[in-house]
Length: 501
Ligand code: ZN
Image (cartoon, rainbow, N blue to C red):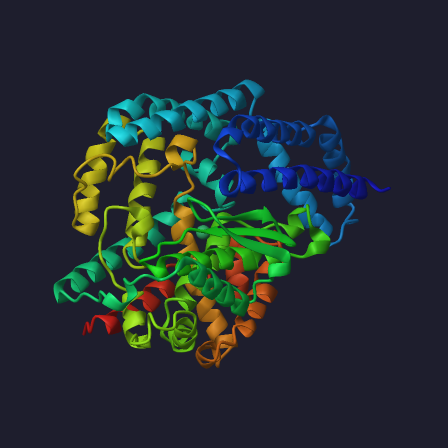
């Protein structure tokens, strides 16, 4: 066996371990009885410490060292070189953190999460403040150990979106923020609302489930290689490409809410199913970044699912599933209902336009506290001031403001920007897809989604981690990532919806 083959064998063994964790976590969210939690926590912790130990072992280190020579002699083909490059990147990052710091992070995370739940319940930021301060100070240590060139925040961003930097985000997000705030103000000025009484009737949950399944299948999701179940918070997990686990939650009086969740998770699921099975367990068979992953979910949820052509196709199907309930709806009113813009306090309830303002606010705050430009104790005030500035709303309390998201309590600093990057990347890819598929809209109207799925598969999914996000975008769209495609899409669509000049 060559050195390279031994490395791949080790990676595939680690993948088997990780895949057990994947199913355990899915089970925890969907099936596990309440009292199973304690044992499950031990199972998951054991799997992850076994994986970590095996990965940062001296054997993997030696293999990577030996492969340096093979790389130098040009003995690796392109795919092999990608696998070695990406494995080395993860290995070196993991090695930089001493065991006691990793343990301290895990301990703090578990206490911080509990405190955050209490603080949110009491709507009292002060209860959470010391834990957030501790988390930030540990994350600063992590960032210093990882290293960075310009901005300490880059080191954390790199965990979720390799290669992305504050220097790239700042101008992209500033442009997006400025033009979105203007659009939101113009929309508010029209005083239009699109509530549809016909969508608030009782829609039996089993019928919702069968309609959602039909849509996911039409998009090209393979139910022989995946499932759709229920959980408190929708997600997509499991083990790509052949065992993708999606979830949703359903509301009897709001059939669109679960439908959009399912379309979102189906986008993630299609990315997973589009990864090449022969590369499973290696970087060539893994997704690039959270931002690219999110670009796929937003494509199917928003660019397709909230579009007019989709509803031309979907409403007759919807009516067939909900005969006797939705007979009087027309596709235009459902299209409008699916696109109402209404500033809200809560990120996860935000519409397509205001969503990015919630993210930009969080990004700015994270960037500033990592750089020591703001004090943690001032966060509620900073949060509320910016909410007023960007969305015209002031949260009445911390639970509806600075305490609403779980991310900081989990140490997930640097994660938020990937949601908005997903919107920007998605729109930029979609623009390129439109050029390549001039019939796209009429295909969608006819329920022919496979040309789009195949285009995404060939241009994005099948490459695994071959390219960094920025390089892939440049390659597929001919441009570096910018906010332009998204802004053009948003201003055109919502300008027309709200009759703005
Ligand atoms: Zn997502």
